[in-house]
Image (cartoon, rainbow over all chains, first blue to last red; front, top):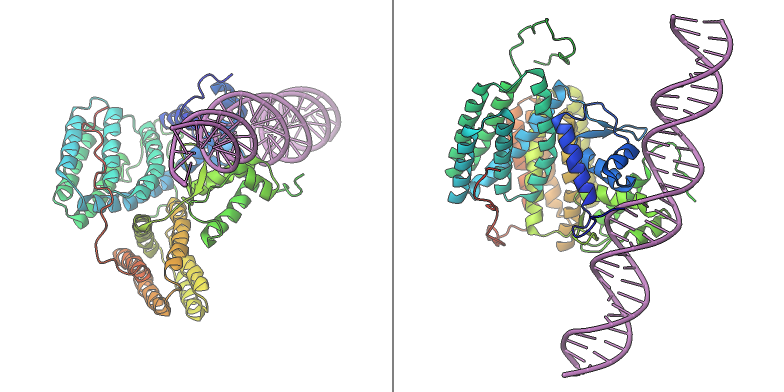
Length: 239
Length: 239
DNA sequence: CACAACGAAACTGTCGACAGTTTTCTTTCG
DNA sequence: CGAAAGAAAACTGTCGACAGTTTCGTTGTG
């Protein structure tokens, strides 16, 4: 009954994974929710085989988790996970910026400047986040290291998922954060355009660190007990 | 027909992948060789389903590659690939060392010292490489960042494969390299035990860079500049 | 002898099925 | 009323099968 299994071979699983990825990142599928293969197969009108491969792809991206019983659940995120994701981003992106700075071109600079201009015009927080991530991806690609890009992709989706998680905590992204983030991007561009690898790595690292601290209220201010019923999830206070 | 599909659920694909991984790293399956699912299924006495999942696991680890036609081939390695792998290792392991230094304990130091002692006693180059990699893995685990370890694992197998590739070029590992590498490990331990994150990152980075330069006879030219045209597909970053 | 057309063999992507296990719902008993 | 036992439903892991495509070997021709 499949109608379009035409040209692009081995694409059905990827399409299903894309759809599910979107559902997970957007929060349609909630963390902890079980994803049963027969159910999804029915939803997408395919058999279990492609669905199963899609699940593997999502597990690879860290968006779902396999239980020992074989069940698949949407991955849950806690404080520690956010930390891990950010640390991984810093590791990969600082190296990416370092390498990108080496072979940076004027065309690359123009691309970034156009991106920054678009960021300033972004109306919604979601749109801004998209542009933000796209810019980071572009820099990673400029590193010329395919493997680094691949590894980064794995973290990227987890980060996007984390964003929704964070946004669900604090109603919306503060407009302050946006202008601050744009400033950070300008700072990143400088050493890249100047072809200063070490500086680029350092600035990128700091930029990521900064932006995430804007997201998560770092100040241990006691949360308003009014409606914080099931939001606060603190692990061991390492700090 | 299967006799032991007993307790450990979802393990058959993993076992097949392990076997194939070994074959690939050891060079039994040569780079560029095609891996056909029916053939492997016959060899392992199972159906194509678990074999297929094993292939996906291997692709994730970067040991095989899917062609557009769907065929699977053992990945081929060239100079550029070695560079990429090493760069990825530096990115991940320098961050790993940085984090490990923060929470380093005396027990960790003892483990490393024991490993170094074993390295000095290693008789064969293969055994030494095993101990070497195990030590690097241990440090990564000490970072406390599970995601970082996972990403590192993906690079680890590619690096092991690269080792065999390099070994096939130059008959055997120079004994000099071993003592040099052990010295490097001692240097790495210092900032870790001293809980100096930045120093640990720096030393680890240098250690990896050094050791790979020992392996590959220093290329007189920076790089053959294979394909100069890279990136810059779209001119405008918006939608 | 080189080369293009052709046909057969092999492989991939997907499907439906089945056994064994896990989960959920129902029923029974304290 | 609550908890434990039992039955039913659902799910996973694996298998074999089939259509469509790719690859390889063969044959025929310039």
